[in-house]
Image (cartoon, rainbow, N blue to C red; front, top):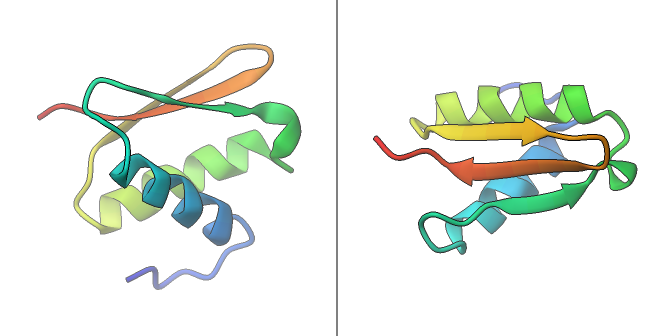
Length: 72
């Protein structure tokens, strides 16, 4: 399912799996301190979601990365 095997693949796949269990309209809040490279994880998330035919949105502030399923 994920042909590219980049260094953020596991983190992105874990986040997408958590999104599957999240009710509509809710976002995951992930501490940026827990991520090795928040920009790389965001890019990987978008790439994997696109390959899976999913639409997600992300936003960051100084401390957190927020990720949610985007409505069609």
